[in-house]
Image 1: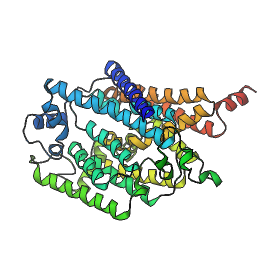
Image 2 (image 1 turned 90 degrees about the vertical axis):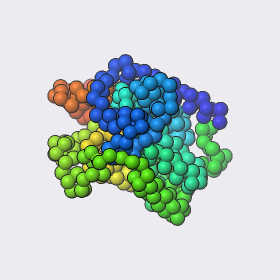
Image 3 (image 1 turned 135 degrees about the vertical axis):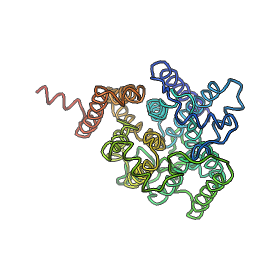
Image 4 (image 1 turned 180 degrees about the horizontal axis):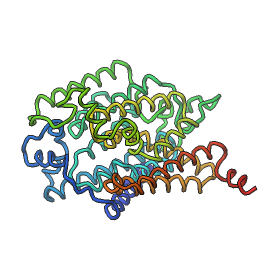
Length: 411
């Protein structure tokens, strides 16, 4: 526990350093936009649906003494930093490697949700992101379904995207049988390790059960049904109990067909919508896919693809495509960290550094200057080049590494 405590503090310090960095070099998001609805809730007024149901962050900000802007900022930054600490510990425990935990926290600090919310004053999502990774940890520990339901319910008061936990657990349950991350899925190595073989960062009880980033496989079918019914029931209850004004253009006020047409028009068509889905993560998504394809098991790959498709489907219910895809941050950060950590352990440390540098450059160009990026052909070209470099980097590593490629080129 002491080692985990130190790792948590290190990950929080790392996340705090990233928050400070983005506040210094990131482009502020100057448009209040959705924040106007949360200001209304902060002032005790009903807001338009679906924003009016997201009351947690405004209520937390209201009880703090630093004024509206300062209190929203404190709530957001605190949640982002704590989420980084919890994610670091969770990644270390499911992989057994401290380096993977710190790398996962680094990818979190270089992700769209982290950069966007760290540089945007008034938004509601940060507590949901913290509670989501806490729910992942709780599910791995096979805690009571009632505790999971409580976390989901509170998370939905921040943002209804908290419901992504339900398909994450169900997909893990359906595709159970994956060994501990980082182990080969072939031959004898596929057997579960004994409790005596647990790494210092793993609890002996977990070595028999950790398979993917969630613990869905450890729950019975009826437990997952109770969780799903309870979560959806709470969603219906909040829509009945919380007073809101007539909805803005959203899933709450439009038919699915009309909303789909509106979202595609807003995105600029299906190809651009697909590009926005990728842009939500950039090279980190490539690295996560690289680990799953090369070292992950069939169950892990299927579970992640299923969850990815659920998130993609949800993007057609909102115009904020990048913010919808943020719900994948736990598995994307962990799998990308596992890929880079594998390079480091294999002695290809310069390759690991290059991979993180590519993500950092992409984050600076796209996430750190999002408003300018959307209208800048030059920045779009740089982002495309970094994405191509990430794919090329993965393919070269798959064929034996960049070092071998350079030697052949020199010959």
